[in-house]
Image 1: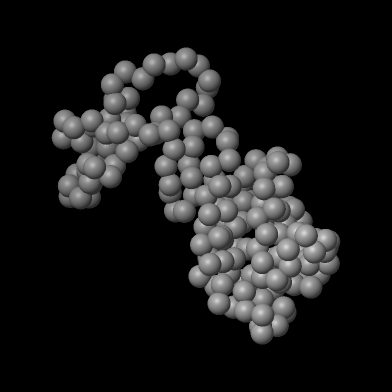
Image 2: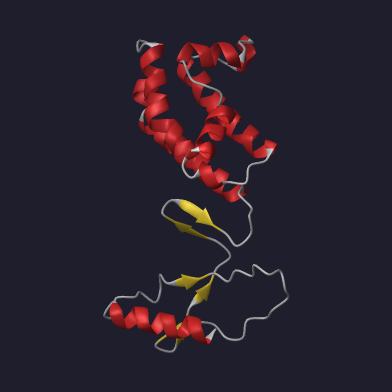
Length: 173
């Protein structure tokens, strides 16, 4: 803990006291899985920093455990926001499906899969992403689930590959 405190003091001096005490938080990661109680907490000029269990860094949720449920939930929300921004194109019945597919592949899907290269994926996580993608494609195509049109046909109409193949491709890069 003393090392963390000394590093924090050095950063504060090098940044010429531009460290915001209200926004600065810390997260304790115990990678050895030992029951170690942290004595004290880092502080800036005597005021202790708030401890958090997870935080958002560059658009991704950082957590001490290899748990990505919150990250997938965050990516899903972000992709829906992007989809809503582009709903004028994606939901327009006069717009050709080919253009809708290109807009989806270029704008919405990257928001959904951002950071997926380093996710420890499970089948349930892939399924959540697949469900989100198919809901978006069905809405864009004006197709409901009660129309009983297969996912393969919808994906083929938009010329979009399966999301689990795209996830695998991202991890292999």
